[in-house]
Structure formats: C-alpha cells, structure tokens
Image 1 (spheres, rainbow over the protein chains, first blue to last red):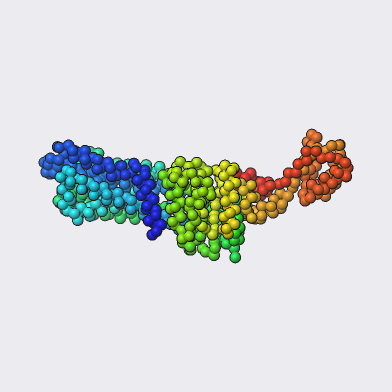
Image 2 (image 1 turned 180 degrees about the vertical axis):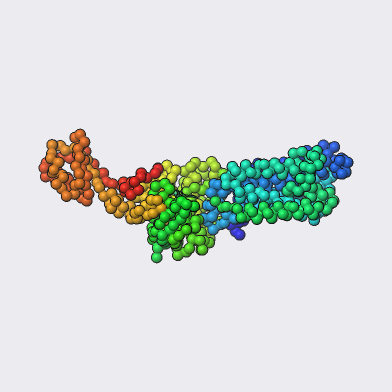
Length: 244
Length: 302
Ligand SMILES: Nc1ncnc2c1ncn2[C@@H]1O[C@H](COP(=O)(O)OP(=O)(O)OP(=O)(O)O)[C@@H](O)[C@H]1O
Ligand SMILES: [Mg+2]
C-alpha cells in the first residue's frame, strides 16, 4: 500500500510534467466550453436541440474528449511504453508490484475524468447557464459505465499491443472513432441519423450522458451495452495482458 | 550453506533451449562471475535466479528461499540490475532513487548512493537527458538502494567509460566488503579478473568451466611466452632441452619461447650460464581472455 502511494505520487507528477496530457484531457474541453459559451448564439435555446442551448447539447461531447483522450489514448500508450522499455520488469524485481503501476495509471485516468466532469458541470452552470445534471443518479451511472467501457477498451489495446508503436497504431483509430461518434468532430445534429444511432451505443455513450444531464432518464439499453463492453473488454484484457 | 544454489537449471523459449543444464553455488560474500558469448544463456540464468523467469527444470534457491514461492521475501533482500531496462523519460534521478528506496524496509540512503555513483550533479536531471553511462550508473544505484543481501548485476559496466568502470569496480568491492553476495554477468575479462572470486563460463546453455579466474587461466591456457633478442648467436637446443619449454620460434632477430611452469627462470638461468644477454625481454602470460577463447572458441564480445 505504501509502495502504491509512492508510485501514484510519482506517476501523477509525471502526468502533470508531460503537460500535453493535462492540456488535452482537462484544459482543452474546458477551453472549448468557454469559447462556445462566449458566443451568445451558443447560449440560446434552439428547437433543433430540443429546446436546449448549443452548449448544453454539446457539453457531453466535450466530456467525451476527456474520456477518449485519457482512457483510449494516454492509458494504453503509457502502459505499452512502460512494458516495452522494461519499466514494469524492473519494478517486478523490487518489493513493489508492476500491478501497482497499472493501478496508479487507472487512478490517474479516473481522477482526470472526474476533475474534467466537475469542471465542465460547474463552469457550465456558473458561467453559461447550463443546468446541473437533472438526473444526478442516472448521470453518475452513465458516466461510470461509459468510463468503465472506455478504460476496458484502453486496457485491451495495452494488452494486445506488443510495442508502444503498435499500441498507438491501435489506439489512434479507436480514439478517433470514439471522438467521431461522440459528436466531437461534427456535432451530432449534423450527422445522418444512422450515425447518431451508432453513436448511442459507442462507448462512452454520449446520448445517455446527454439524456441524464438534461432530464430524461438514460435508456437502459444504452447503459447495458456499456456494461457489456466493459466486462467483455476488461475480461479479455486481463487474460491477454503481459508484464513484459 | 551457500547463498545461491542452482541445480540442473533448464529453460526453454518455445523450441529454443536457452539454458540447457546449469549448476553452481555461490557462497556468502563472494563475487561470482558469469561469463560467456552472446546468447549463451547468462541473462536467462540470472533471471531465473532472480525469480523473473520460471525454470522448465531444475532448482534454484537463494538465501534458502524459492524465488517463485517466497518472492515477497526474496525481493526485499535481492537487488537486481537488468541488462535491458529503462525508466520513464521524465523521471528525475533523485525521484527514481527515492521512489525505489520507499519500497524497501531498510533502504540505503539515496543521496549517499547518488554521490557514490557520481550522479551528484545530475540529481534533478530527467532520465531522458542522462548519457548512456549515467543511465547505467542509475541502474546500478537502483539495484543497491534496497540494501540487498544479494545483488545480481547483469552487464554491470557495459557502456561505461574506463574511469567510471574503475570507479564502479571500487564501489562493488565496497559493497562486497559490507557482506553482500554478488552475481556479476560480464563480457569484460579484466573486470572478471579484478572482481570475481570465481567465475562460471557458460556456453550454449551449459557450464563449460567453473573456477577462480587464475585457476581457469592456469588449467585452460597455462602457456607463457617469452620474447627476447639474444646478444650472441645461440643454439635453439639450449632452450628446447629444458623440460619447461614446449616450443622455440624465431622471427627475425627475436626468439619466442613458449612454455609452462617456471619457464622464465629456466630460460634466464640457461642464458646466464652461456653468457648470453637477453635484450628486450618480455614475458607474456595467458589471460582470462585466452582461457575464454580456448573454452568457447570465440572472442569475448565487447
Ligand atoms: N524472451 C525471450 N524469448 C525468446 N528467446 C529468448 C528470450 N530471451 C532470450 N532468448 C534467447 O535465449 C538465448 C539465451 O539468451 P540470453 O539473453 O540468456 O543470453 P546472454 O548469455 O545473456 O547473451 P548476451 O551476452 O547477448 O546478453 C538466446 O538465443 C536468445 O535469443
Ligand atoms: Mg545477457
């Protein structure tokens, strides 16, 4: 436990030191929220968004940026790099376990996602009249399951890839798919209906987040799919994961 | 009781037999060298000893512990420097040592270790910005920071400049003098001769020789060579008649005598008796290098 605490401390420091990571996971989504929020039209309720303002409608997609970046891009790349460079092996020669390093990375991912979610919710509420999630329980559930699904996919990439390069080769397309179907590149109201439907079931499940945020309880099927992805990918990853 | 006991160790990677049949013991406080050509199975052997690899056959015991079953106890007491292992790019020297020190019940003082290994002015340097030799020294420090009872060092001084290499040797001798048992994998014969009490030469997964460095040289390559220029013409038979001499050759004005035992004394006495002065006299003794080549048919890799 002591070793885990020390590893977590150092890994957090490394995460912050490499400032591309906090920049893309926390600062970027927040900056986008502020930019869109400062455009007056972004704050007007619109019929095409079901009487939501654009930033209300788009906020869950901003959260997708954090989730995708952290869980399917940074996490697998860091783990695969550590494995390839023998960091995990060296740790295996000490009383600390390489599993502690993996756990520390997961904690950092979770913390990043939590911080970003809180910032988006609070800043949205205080500065741009985005209401707090109307269904706190449903929102929490959607966020937890969506996060679990993406982290499991990230771990699966780390498990399947032999090298850091191949981890990136797998992570980047996955990351782009998650971002695309999460409505980040093109807001979803501009996408054809069938792509939006696919997006409903693509982790982290942006529709469930939007529903819970704006007052509809999230669709059980949307949540169920996230749980299934989390379990299936997680189980496969733990089976295939190699420490060296 | 030996500190390390390896009996009939066998390890395969798929079809490839990396370690065929290796046995040796290491006594407390000993510096034990493992030599052998590339791919001989040295790393695989010591990684089995460290509990990083599971042997396919044979037994390993370290400090009376089973490296797999008693892994937790073993890791507190055994420090390992892996042949290929890096650290995160942005991790700084002092951070790495403090972190690794925190894993152990009774660690060494990281700051002191940093100074001993000549990394004092690099304590706040990121791993990525260290030179190869500095990385290597950090790696040695990490293997020693837990105050181990046994240190396993795979390619201790590979990549170090001659001065750092000598400094590292001194450090290793100090560590041994404090009672630590050391297993050293090396390609440097000079290092083995200087540091090791005994060495095992491994070739193709088997121990082909196991002795003190001097013992190896005298049994495997006992020949000595004497070169000189005689001040007067002389009959080769003066020398070939000596029991210590095995061969006499001439290259130009130079005589090259090959022999064993106390050949130098025998040759100089016979020359003195015949009033011949040996100019430019040089004695070439076999080294561990010669023994290595003799045993494995290959030059030690650099
Ligand atoms: N992880 C591995 N998977 C498959 N084969 C391996 C692995 N590690 C080593 N080998 C093979 O096992 C044999 C012994 O390797 P080992 O690393 O033990 O040699 P070594 O004596 O340490 O060599 P060197 O002096 O080059 O470090 C080699 O033929 C090598 O190719
Ligand atoms: Mg090796």
